[in-house]
Length: 151
Image 1 (tube, rainbow, N blue to C red):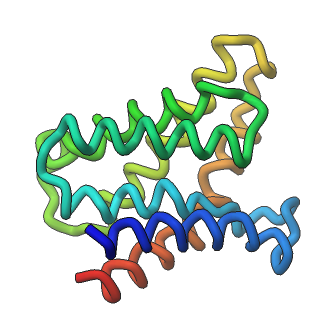
Image 2 (image 1 turned 120 degrees about the horizontal axis):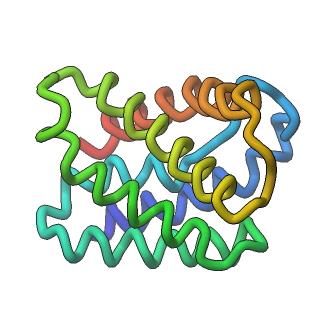
Image 3 (image 1 turned 180 degrees about the vertical axis):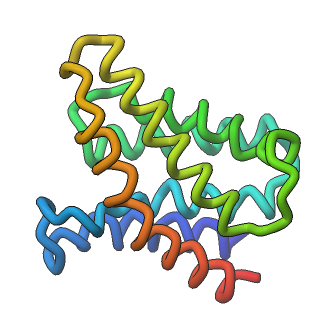
């Protein structure tokens, strides 16, 4: 359990400090390290309710630290956590990278859909696709590194 707490803290620190090294307007490296840590933590927390509660807490903390939209990441993290817990039923693949890609794409889709529904911005398929591909590279690398370290 201490490993998981350490993983979450490191993910928040890395996500906070990454902007010092990588320009935030880059099209290739938008980090979702806290979400990536949630993907890894799924392997260690078998009880769905505990995992969902953790997702809510992480989403709330993420909202407080990184966004001015309190509740947005709380909802997106919870919906994504439900997806993470049920991805094996939806996709019959044993290839983890495909699962990770699907989770990140799902998270971006949910976030984009919620922002569209509340009228935060107008539909722009280029913006949506850019948000997906800009977060895939660095987050897949981060997830693979975490898997090697934690497991």
